[in-house]
Image 1 (cartoon, rainbow, N blue to C red):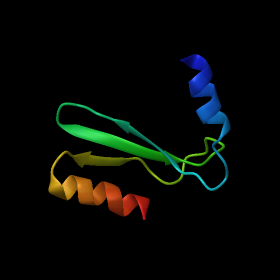
Image 2: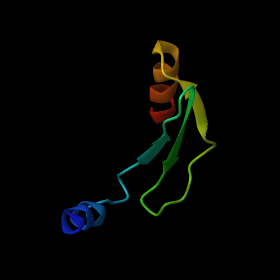
Image 3: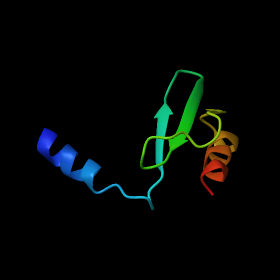
Length: 61
């Protein structure tokens, strides 16, 4: 399994945006980083509801 994960990581290029989401009970936090691991902007805190998901997707566009 580790080998497969390493292969996927090696395929990340400068055209990719990596988004990590910390899922909590009430508020979630998302952070986008580029292929080098450099954060792009501030973390986004959102709730898991329609408004929160729209907020998350608007961060990505």
